[in-house]
Each structure stands twice: as C-alpha cells, then as structure tokens.
Length: 497
Figure 1 (tube, rainbow, N blue to C red):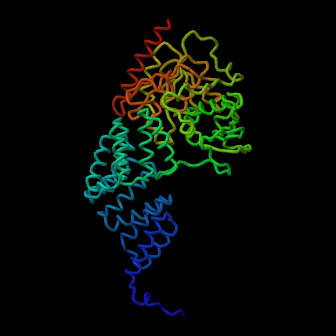
Figure 2 (tube, rainbow, N blue to C red; figure 1 turned 135 degrees about the vertical axis):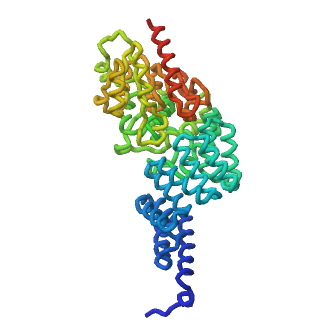
Figure 3 (cartoon, rainbow, N blue to C red; figure 1 turned 60 degrees about the horizontal axis):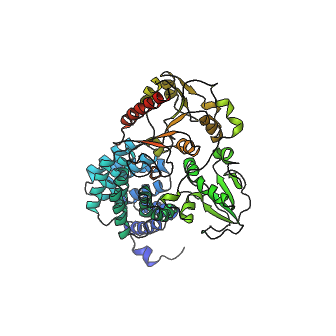
C-alpha cells in the first residue's frame, strides 16, 4: 500500500474538492473541456452537494454540446434550491441551444429575480431579446450589464451589436472600439466593428477587420486543410490559385465577381463552391475552373478564402461592382417559359432557411405576400422548398405557380428566373442570383439588414446597384414593407400596359 503524502493526510474532503475545482477552472480557461469535466466530477465525489461544482459542470457540459445532461444537472440544482440564479442562467443557455428562445426568456426572468445585480444575467437577458428581435430592450439589458461591470469588453461588444441592429452605426462602432480599448485582441469586437465599417462603406477598414472572422468566440469553419500556402496578393506568375467558398450560397454568389476578375486578367484560378452551385457556375467564365466541395481538389499552388479576396485585391467601395455576370445554363431554359403568356411573370421568395436563425428573421409571413397576388400578373415560387401551408395560401390567392419539385440546384433556379420579368425576394441567395443575372430585382430587408445592402435607409446597394431595396422602418414591420411593395408593383404593372 503506497504511503500517504502529507497533503493526503491533512486535506479534508471539502478542501480537496476546492483544489480540484480550481484545477478544473484552469483547464476550462485553457479550453481543455474534457479535463475540466473530469476534474469537476472528481470534485463532486468529495463534495457531492456543492452547488458551485454542479453549476460549473453544467457550464462545461453546455460547452461540450451535451445539452440534455446539462439540462438535467440544472433541473437537479433547481429542485434543491429554486433561487439559484446560476442554474437558471445555465438553463436559459440550454434553451437557446435547443432553439427555444421563449423558454430561455422565461428561465432568464427567473435568474433576474434571483440575482438582479448580476451582469452576466443581464447580458444573457440581452442575448435572448436579440434573438427575439427585441433590439431596443436588448440594448437596455446590455446597458444594465455594463453599469454593473463597465470593464467587461464582452458587454461592450453585445451593446454594439444591438446598436448595429438598431441601425445606429456610429454608436455601434464606438461600442466596439470601447471593447478593443479594454481587450485589443478581442476577436468578437474586431469582427463586429468590421461589419459596421462595411455597412458604412469604409471598405479598407472593413476588409482588415473581416479577417477576424476566424478568431471570434464562434469562429467560422475552415473548409481548406491542404498544404498550399495562403495567397498574400503577390504576383501569381502562372501559379494556380484555389479560392474556396466559406459561408452561405449567397456569399459565394456575391463574391464570385472577384474570381471572375482574376480569371479575366489571365490568372489561373480554381474556385471550390458548394455543390448546389457547381452546375450553374461551371463554364460561366473562360479560364475559371469550378469544383464542388464534395469533389477531389485538383492540384493548386496557393489558396485563399473567397471572402478574403477583395481585401487582398484592395477593393474599395468603387471597386465592388459590377456584380458577377451569371447566365442560366442554356439547355435548361426552355422548359421554364410559360408558352408566351401575355401577363408579366413575377418570382416570389418570402422564406429563408428556417434552420438558420438569421434566415427566420429575414422571412416574411406568406399571409402578407398574399395581397400581391390580386394584381394582374402571374406569380411563381422561385425556391426549392417552402411550408406547405404557405404554398396553399398563395395558391388560393391568385395566379400562382409552384414547380419547386423540379428544382435540383441553382442551375434550375437560374433557368426558372430567366423566364421572369421581375423577382421580389427577401434577403437570401435568390436575391444575389437574380442581381448577378441582371434581372429586375426587388429585395425586402429587415431592420438592421446585413452590411452588404449598404447604409441604413439606402434604396440601392453598392454591390447590386440595379436592385431596388424595400426596408423595414421599424423592427418586425413587414406589413409596412409589403404595403409599399404592393403600391410599387401596381405602378410597375400599370406602366407596362
């Protein structure tokens, strides 16, 4: 039997648990979550009822994505003490991870009642309100968090994000700069400041800050793992450059213009894109090779994320246009024409990706679209999938065609849109495609719309100057937007007769 150390002899269970707890916190700070969990579970062997250990275990389980276990831990804590604010806080985070913001709001309300002087609770209250689109209330919550802890840079970041969504861009920039004075290397602040700068048209600063997207608290995934060095903008001198898509389909379509320009200069350029875009983009530009993300990469000498390209090229506001020049695949166009119908044909897209929180915030209730169908035109759904009840409602409202079952990829969508006279869409990949095809395009934008649509209130974007923008004047006010679209569409149709 090994001899007991002096530490083993003198350390009582609670002291031992505390020592393990401190080791767990250190492991958590270093990002070693498995070690942190193991240490906390060992500590709980010595102090099984210690609330602080169980609260931190729930936090680690959340960070490891084990929400069911974390929720059970919080429920057990609250069964023992329903006034434990930290347990309510963790429960609200579990609800957010389960995409249940209303339940999260109920949980954080309990936390606020238990700990009204907790900056973390007020800040998480703000985060939940942001997801619910209640940006004014979220700003007030972040202000309360800052009043309690003015030196926490994260609360400045959150406050700046709320201000950006409220379209108060100068104040939003100031909030992010305040965070950076406290923590100069804080990726979230750099990234959020970049989004403000791009919206303000400050492209030099915006592209510099845009590179922080890989170093935030929730970094974007990196889809390139090959051995080629990253291109820094030096002369390619015949070397083959791989540009790889990194974010959404709309982002790839938006930034495709820069790849086309490089190929137009005679450079050897290969673009790796999402599979739904391969058939459409392949063959669009002489000398520009297209490969799908699900295909084997051809040999290449250098690589660069696609959205880093304007920063490397030094693209200022005057350099972002014109959009990509995209034509439909000729072989697929004929089947989408409606036999020479006399009435104008208008494409509609009202629903974003419902699995994406941002997509839901950009979506318009189909019931608000329905009055458009009383106008003298033929309307066409230009998406690949939509809620069946929405399709039925619009189908009963007027001349409405749904051929979404025939859409396999964006080559089909482009061919379908080539047969239209106008596209009316929310902020989604369809808007980028229509504008890149030089189609008449009206884009419906939520309050706090993305930076790519220009400064608040702008009716045109530097990225898509031919697109007409219809913006919410108040958060959530899609009815006001659709009233203006209805009037504009009636005038547009009248002018065609």
